[in-house]
Length: 372
Image (tube, rainbow, N blue to C red):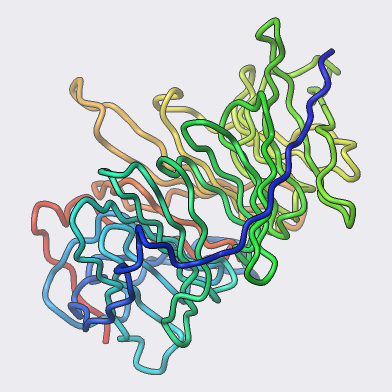
């Protein structure tokens, strides 16, 4: 079996000439920007999903197409235009935009799970260069930048966003920020999207070998740097080896949310890369080839975004929660009411306390009452 070598480089952060004009412009947002966003609270005591609530923003109907949230759900950012909302403020109405007005720039936004960083990713289509900007949430100033040739692909962050795994057109890398320095570790022969634990110390991926076979691998960080990939397998209750994909992780990487080819979605707990038997959720797939999944950091809440077909049209989404009960059983609940479809991109907060989602009917100008 071929040895996998991790290649390390270090660079200082700077605001480059390519993106020197991409400063922060804070502009008042439209107070209705998050008007259509609903919250489904999850009770930690009764371990059930409670009736959905309207978000506490007053305004006329608006439409939010893509959004991200901090781990507790108090900060929400629109991926399309950088408008963000701080729900932890007393009036819960701070709605401000991180505008970029330069030509040839595509822009995307993240918010760190711990709520300390707003992250803006710029891609110059003309120069084929990208820059990731760390924006302090309090001062709204660009504190650190990281440049990349080409466009950022799929990117996964640790809770504090100081470690991230990303895919570019030429490489798959693990990047660690220490002060103003970014250390990049290239991991060759990896396939699939990397998944990173909350601390950033564990990264799950797949390694492809010369014979085109693949194995699941765990890469761990210590004081000496990143380890070489450690390969592992999972087994069902009859000790048959499972074919699976990792969809999300919890408990800093000690809990896996997997999609097994044989029985579907399951939660697997382990320690020190020794994995237990899967807890199958036995979810009844509507269209098994197209679903999105996430798990809370404590490993006790799972959200499934499931496509379904009606009259030959594959364009309908239902949201399902699986909540682990005190007796160890998983209880399934449907989030969206019957007759109300969800829009793509629902979010389960990492603390497992709530689901943010948008009714599909808002695209047809269906009115919803606003709670004040």
